[in-house]
Structure formats: structure tokens, C-alpha cells
Length: 305
Image (cartoon, rainbow, N blue to C red):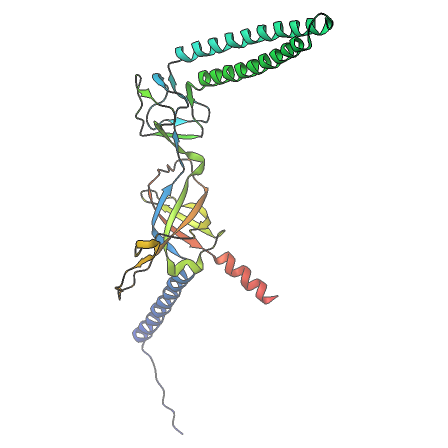
């Protein structure tokens, strides 16, 4: 029996192994991309966000001193600006005088009431009752005067407007001479302790996103990546196709688009570690990668038990 024998030349063998190697690399890369898109949801539509605290004075008056400047770092309790205190000091002194007068009136009424009670036979029952009623009235007047004094003291204290959070002053629009009104915000503070990243993920990727999943955050303009963790997934978004018609009935669009666009759902990602040299700016663009390998490995380990 005669066997056919094939012999490869050296150049042909090299090309063969190179082709096989390239094919294996392509398969591995394809598998890696499949795993990345199937199990590791990601988005380039991310934004750095934080709680913005609107600072409004508790009293009305003219600003006499501004202690901060725009974009300044501040700490909780720092004095942001001061309102003219003269009027509040006068109001406090007046309230204090009213308290002292009420105490004098009460003391006098108590002395008269005690004297009337000691002179039972000489003072009528009606006069004794009137004396007791006068004591109770002056006690109420004193309590009211104390409340007004404490309110005046509080207004005096709050003529100095303090920072309520740690963070940054932004968009400062108050200057010396500005007349501010109580309950009307004049300064915005970015709470530095509340900074997080919000990413908008396609709804088809939500199955791979769960609270507690690890995340990698890449900020535009920063080479170093940040570590984060999924905190929550939004429970609802606004439906632009629906509105309320007459009689509070739903107004449904009678047309249907054949091309269905994938909705994007907000996902909140907390920042676990940040290098000191990395500066986070609210509104900054970020790319977010969600990693749930730990979840898959845990599930596989439980299934094998």
C-alpha cells in the first residue's frame, strides 16, 4: 500500500501558524467583546453630579459684608455673608426690656396676691380671685415676652448667614449693599460630600446592572480612572408620548413609529476612591463601565454547592 506523504516547506509552515495565531487572537478578542457587551454594561453618557444647596437668609436686610468669593472652598459653619445687625440688636434690647418689665409686674402681682390671701377677713373673695387671675395673666405675659426675646435673639444670630454643608460656592451673585429678603435664595453651594456620577444606560442593559455592582469611572480629560459602585437604578422616566387630555383621560398618540429607539435609564454610581489630584466638576462628562463578574462568580459558586 502506498501512502501519500505531504511535506510543508518552511515558509508555508510559518504562514500556516501565523494564520492560526491571528485567528485565535481574533476569536479571543471577539469573545472578550461579547463578554464586555453582554455582562459589563457601559456608557459614555455619564455626568458628575452633586447636591446643590440653595442658601437663603432667615431675615430681611441689607448685606454689609461678604466673606466668600466665587468658587471658594468652604466648610460647614463658615460665615458666608452678614446682614445689617443694628435693627436686630435694637429689637433684641427692646424684647429684653419687655421681659424685665413683665417680671416686675409679675412679682408685684404675686406680692399683692399673697397679701390678699393673708388678709382673708379684710379682703373679699372676689378681690382674692381677681388677684390670682392677675398673677396668671402676668405669668402668660412673661412667657410671651420671653418667646419674643428669644425670637429677637435668633434673628440677631441669623443676621450672619452660615454655610450648611461642606463644599464650594458657585455662581455668587450677592455683594455688599444688596438688599436680601428672607426665604429667597441668594447663594448656591455644591455639597462636596454628596458628589456622585449618574450614567444613562440603554434599557436593554439593565439586566446586567444591580445595586452593589463595581464600576469604573473615566472622566474626560483625566487619565486616571476612578472606582465606584452602583447605588441605585431609576424607577421611572418621563414618557413624552403620553399626556393628559380632557376629563383627566390619557391622550394617546394614534401613530406608532416603526423604528423603536432604546430608552436610557439613569443609574446612580457612588465614588469609592478618588486621587487627590483629580478634580471633580459637577457637569463633567464621564464614561462608566459596570462590572458584575463578582456577582456571576458568586452565583456559579452557589450553583455548584
